[in-house]
Image 1: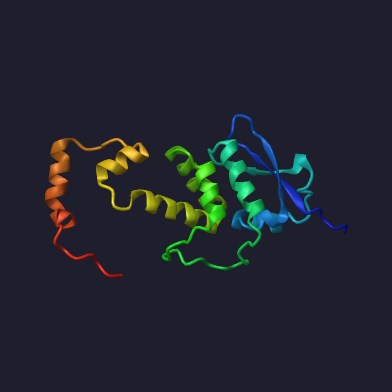
Image 2 (image 1 turned 30 degrees about the vertical axis):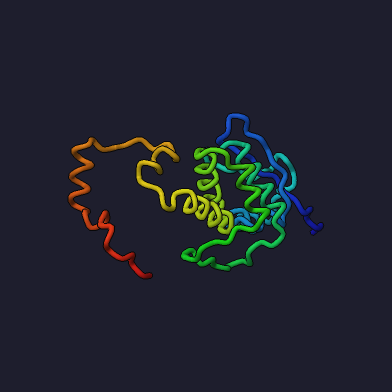
Length: 180
């Protein structure tokens, strides 16, 4: 059997354009889904454009392009079977901070990034995106968070007051924070 090229093709099936992206095998290793598909389709010529791997999630071509570019620029992919500690605070490197400043300019783009990285199983980038959300909302009131993320109120003032009465303990300023 001839050696396989070091790239493959991915198509955004849910995008109106259905753009096809060329991705290196090394970059694809960041995704647990792409890694599994490469193994499953071992005998198929994934380096031929007509044999591309379809991605079926409603995200923009730009979001998919940004995530694939991040994977290309990030040299070390997690080892197969390696589990990330999801309860640990994530440190954002300078190049990752630059990625988030450039690629994520609205809450909609951040939401797309979270959906795509979760779907593809790109755990390091998903964890960093979650940390960005944590950093954005830390210390903000519910109203500030709603405005920041474009979330409308679901409750009438009466319903909101009833919920506050039921969960008064959550609004008690004197109660010390829970230790984990």
